[in-house]
Every structure is written in C-alpha cells, then in structure tokens.
Image (cartoon, rainbow, N blue to C red):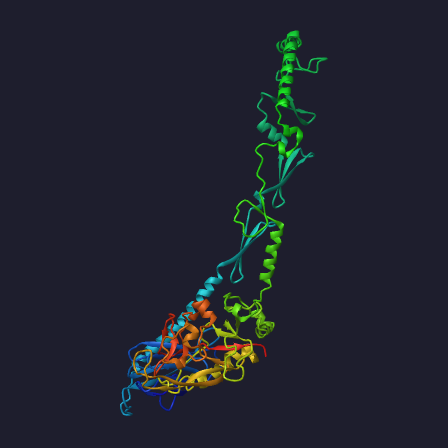
Length: 589
C-alpha cells in the first residue's frame, strides 16, 4: 500500500467546476490520501475543504499550503460517493466563492459502468457551508454587542459630568447636580448675610436677621430691636445682675455664706494645733528617710559587681570546635577557624561537568544565547552558571540542557571526543514522521527512513537556525542490521538487531537507556552500545521524560516490524508512528 496523491484544479466560475482525471479510490488500497488543490483565485484569506460521507457524516478542514491529507482509518473507510466542496473566505471571514466535486470509494476493482452517485448529500454539504458562514456572522454580531459595553468611566470635577466610554469609543454622559453641593462660604458685611458658594460657582445668601429670628427670638432671653434702621440685640431685663460699683463683681457672684466659710477656714488653718501636726509629720518623714538609706544594699554606694547578689553566670569561653556545650561562648579564634574553612569550601573547584550534572535548576538562559556567551561557557569546560534543566526559547521551541560532557572521551577515533559540550533536547517533539514507510526494521536504525531522510531535514529546519555552526560532530555506535527470527524482549522469535558500527553524527534519536536508565523493549545488547548511561536531565527530573502532548520515537529496534518509543503516559512502547525529538551536542566553534 502506498500514499496516494491527487492534483485537483478548482475553477470557481461555476458551482461544479472541480476537475480531475479521476478521483476514484479502492477502499484500503492506500496508507494516506493527499489532495493538492490548484485554486483559480488568489484574492482570498482562508480556504476550507468540506466533505460529506455516504452515511451523512461530514468533515471540515482548513486548506494549508494548498493541500489536505487524510489517513485511511479516519475517513475513507466506506464505499460510496463522497461529496466535497472548496470554499473561499475574505479577511472578514465572509464566504466569497465555493465549488463542488466528488470522490468515489469502492470495494475491489472499480467498474466504470457502475459509478456510485448519491446526489442527495449535496444539500447536506451546502447546509454545512451555510452553518459555518452563519457561525461567523453570529460571532461578528457578538463582537458588535461587546462594542456597546462600557470600558471606562471618568469624572470632571469642574463641570460635574460623569463620562462613560464604550468599546466602540462612543460616550454617554451624566450631568451631576453641582448646584446642590456647597464648596465654600463667607460673611458679607455689606449685606449682613451669610454667603454659601455652590460647586457650580452660584451663591446662596442667608440674611443673619432671619437666622436670629428663627433660632434666638424666643422672647425669653434676647429681644430684637431696630435702631436707626439697623437690627440690634438686647438681653431682657432681669436675666443678669448688674456689676456692683468698686467690686468688679455682681451682687450675686460671691455670696456672704461663701465668704464666711472662707474666713473661718483660713483662721483654723493657722492655729498652734495645726503646727504641731505638721511638725510630727516632718519628724516621721525624716525617720523613714534614714531607715531607707540605712537599708540600702552595699552595691548601691560601692558600685562594685562583687557586691551584687544573684549575679548572672558569665558563659565560659570555648576555644575549640569539638565542644558540645550549650551554654559556652565560642572564642574569636574559633571564629577565624570557621571563616578559614568557609573560604576553603568556596575555593573548591566546582567548574566541571560532574558538579553541573548533579544539580537541576531549570532557569531561562535565553539571554546567554542572544549575547553569544552560551557557547563559550560550554566550551571552557567550567559551564559557568549553566546547570541541568536550564533552557532557552527560540523560534517558539523550548530547548533544554540534558547533560554536560556525556560523550567526552568516547569514540573510535584518536583519543575520542575531547571537546567540552552540552547535550540539548527539545521539550516537545519537533515534527511527526514514520520510522519507515512500512512496518519493518530491516537495516536497523541506520537503515531507517528516519535516519536517512527525516533527521537530516530536522537538522537543517529546526536545529541549525538556532545553534548554527555550534552543533558539533561526534562518533556513535548504531545498529545496522537485524535477525528477522531472533528472540527479543517480547519473549518471541519475532526479530532482533544483530550488528552495529561507528558513525559520525550531529544528532540522533535517543535510546531507552538514555531516557529510562535501563532497557525496556530493546531487542538486544546492540541497542545500547556507547549510549550506556541515563542522561542527567531524566535522572534528576524524570517528569521531563514525557509532557503528554505527543509520544515520540526512540531508536531501539523492538522486533522485525517496530521500533521503541516513549508513549503519551510516560510508559515505554514498541509500535506506532509519531513524534521526532532528537538530541544534539553543542559547543563553541
């Protein structure tokens, strides 16, 4: 079975103007079907492909790069006529053009005299297009309604106007009654009035005479009179007592009774008996003072620490670092000893791959890529401020450090790889592809389509645009043949790898040991070779083994028909087709 491809000319001058020599398919006679559309119009924003199966189930797919691809399990699994249309939309998502065609799927060989026709599905197809158009119109209507909602409000304290601004930038105003708000006031001597100033700068005048008449004109204390045309206030007779001449007081301000009490009290305070009482009190105070002084502690007058009672315990000075005392004080000398030890620790050499491979940090280091220091930090071998899990984001892809110098000293040529390097892996798969066009592992990993075609394309499309010539070449041992009847991890003789060789590489799919730290479905020992240790990233942070977005390939041969992979749920598996997430080595060149 092969992949089928149809080139289809779509002329939008007529409704049924989709042409092709023959769009006819034998059910099951393909792996996938690709439609390559040649559209007669170019003044459109979006092109959509709509299709109705014979059983009425419909599909809609956006046409990108002029093609649409289907696999047999998902769509063309029923014999009959599949009606389809190609529709064009402008930048406002309005339907501008549509044209229709059909695909015929049969069981077995096709008989030209028995063409299957089901024109009754055309109304269903037209209805599908109309529903999509209506959905766009409803969305536009919703946007218009949103534009009527308020997005902000402001207040002008001068005019008292509230302004509400809608999302379509129109406004609604509310004029508040500033004439009811008093902001200031004063007394006008000329008009004899209180003047109230309102927020709108208008004034209200209240004559003082009206206030007096309302609040004080009770005819009991104050009486109002007009003298010479002016309003005056008088206190009524009998309300107060006139001042007595020569006294400065009124006759009722200090009564005779109070005066007599004062005279009597003054005389009694100066009797001889009172003096005796005062003398006795003074003597008692003097005696008490002497007793207090006599009873003072010696320390109060000596000021000596030795005269204190209940003295605090002064801690013993400890001049070693082995004491277990909980009350002793450490000497200054031992403080220096500690400082020397700290200095010694700080002087230890942490600038090596082993130290940096043992710490997961997960810091964004994109700035190091941008300023070019990333590669010098790697090539120096001290990996300054770089740790496992640190990542960069470039071209919407997260690239993460999986380890340092993992391939150092490895290789079959000379002294092996002696260039300091970092292993970089993407957080998610970069693309999807099959290991081979058919379910076979003949030729091992090196003989696969993944090795010969897909990975070179991934290198030039995804990796080189980010890391440029800093991607280094290394030597790796890879499988290149299988024994189709050899025993494997499935416990059957359904095939296993049986040979390997050294190859120069710039990227590879990872193997099971690098990801899991052990084999799972690898068919033989040839699958491990020089990649015989788990990458530090997956050892320190195993959650990065999978992100559940898509499963991805490993390079291990599982049997004669399948390679191993990391499945969505993080478990290992041995069949299927899916994501490509290779590792690569980077340094300064």
